Length: 479
Ligand code: PFF
Image (cartoon, rainbow, N blue to C red; front, side, top):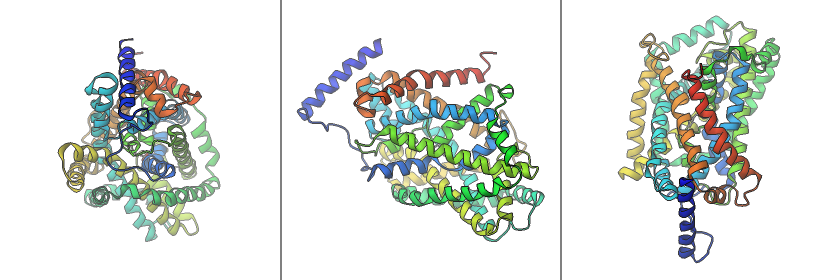
C-alpha cells in the first residue's frame, strides 16, 4: 500500500514534470549515452546473439544428461516461459527506461519510482555473476575453438568412442593447452569490446544463426538414422518425476536463466539502446523461442549419438565434445561440417561473451571515467585470471573439491543457480511491485492490453513466487 502510494505520487509528479518540461509533447524520455540500435531486427539479432551460445549446445545436453532426462527438460521449459520470459521483458523494459548501464539504471529507476537508490544492488549482483560466468565460459569457448582446428585437420576421421574420449581427456588434462585457448578467446573478446564493435556484430549474427541451425538440422538427419533416436526421444521427453529433487529443479531453473542470459543485467544493458517504438514483448518472445528451439535441437542431436554408441548420458561437461566429433567422423564431408560447426559455435560463444562483459565495462567507463579500452582491458584481465582456476579444474585441481565440486563446478553453481535467480527475483519484484503500473504499461504496452496483463501477472506473482519456492525447496525448507 505504502509502496503504491509513493509510486502513485511519484508517477503523478513525473507526469507533471514531463508535461512541464515538454508542454505535453510525447518525447521527454532519457536517451541512451551510446545511440540506438538501427532497427528492431538489429536488436532481436543482438539479443539472440547474447542468448544463443554454449548454454544451448554445450550446457543444455550435459545438464539434461546429468539430471536424468525428461523431467529436467519439462521443468526447464516451464521455467523458460513462466519465469525467464517475463524477466527478460522486465529487464529490457528497465534498460530502456533507464538508458544507462544496469547499475546506474537501477539506481536511477529506484530513486525515481521508490526514492531508493539501493536498487543498484541488482546491477552489482549482475557484475559479480558476469565475472564468474565469463571466467569459465571463456575456457569452454576455448575448447570449442581448439576443436575447429581438430576438425579441420581431420582428427575425427576413423575414430571410435574410446579414441574420441581419450582425445578429449588428454586435451582438457593439459592446462597449458586449454590455458592457451582460454587466453586466445579472452583476447578476442576483450579486443572487440575495447573497439566497441559489439554492436556491429548483429550483421554477422544474421548469417551465423541460420547457418548454425542448418548444420544442426544436418546433424539431426544423421542422429535420426544413428540407431539411438527412439531411446533419445524417450530420454528427453518422457519425464520420470520420481527422480526429481529440489536440486534438480534448482538446476533447471538456473539453466533457464543462464540460457536466456537473464538475471544479470546483460539484456538490460542492451535494452538501453532499444528504440522507443520497438515492441518488447514481441522481441522477447522471438528470442525465447529461438533459444529454446536451438537447445532442444542440440539435445535431439546429442542423445541419439550417446545411446547408439553406448556413451554415458551423465558424462558431464565433455558430452558434446565427445558425441559430435563421433558424428563428424562418420559423416561424408564430416571434416568440413565439423570445422564449420565448431567455428559457428565459437562465434555464438563470442557474441555471448561480449554480452557478458558489456554491463561491467559500461559501468566501469561511466563510473571511473576510464576509456573503453582501459575498462575492457582491466575487466578482461580479472576475468582471465579467474578463468585459470577453471582451466586447472580439469587437471591439477581436479581433486581439489569443495561444496559442489571443483572451482569450475562452484563458479557455475554460484552464478547460475544462485546469483542469476537472485538478480531475476529482484528485477521482477522491482518491475512488478515497485515500479508504477503507468510506468511499466507505458514502456511495455501502452494500451494495457492482454500482453501487459499477462506480463504483470507473471512478473508480480508467478516468477517471484516460483523463484522463492525453488530456492527454499533446494535448501530443504519443505522437507
Ligand atoms: N546465454 C548464454 C548461453 O546460453 O550461452 C550465456 C550467457 C550470456 C549467460 C550472457 C548470461 C549472460 F549474461
